[in-house]
Image: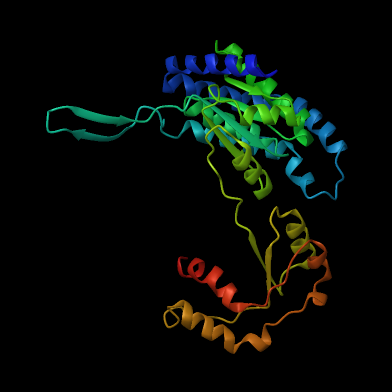
Length: 315
């Protein structure tokens, strides 16, 4: 048995109690969590400052880690928006009548206990709790060590609301930020029903390769940034430095106007841009700030068109 086995068991038992919470109660609790998050913003920001003090301001993760009053308000509004969603629990997904008269009904039910592994984004703590709770699931949170103080402050707020509402605080538990805890969570068969990694490609790949618990593999996000020659280079460089994925950064000059009625296929679009290619070429030395942010300038317009055409045509 691992050191977290008792914790896993407590969360699993707590999750069973959600079966007795109706939709109205679920939404009431979520609204209370949103209100408490805003009313206790000072304490959350104080703990967030401790995390920020340990990180270099030039680190791309700094802005993702940083909380402000405005960001906390946005997070609280996000929780309130979840209360306005229909409950995903108990929906009839399909019905089948067998030849022998037996009626089969497929109904949506909670998973049970969901484990979330994520990086230095304290907003995720509230986001995933609200979604898990709304869908009738308990959750085990494994956040990054960079955001540990922030995460603990946020979970403390959630716990206080759950207790006030007469619910088991073990419906959400934040695990220690060490690697041993991550290893136990990834192998908590019989306790955790589903794992969801929330972060960059490295984290997602690590969880997928090492977990013995079922995993929902999320995408690494939209990986391509497009910087136009007419853009503000300082702002563009800051955005690129903060981008979690920098494999393909297309830097293009001002693109000519397109008659979208006549250019209605990718081939025509590519042909049109090839005509303008001599006027659109860029070199890395023209944008040293972009290069310093980790960008790769690619003047391959076939790839460019392949990535962009359908987005433009779907506007």
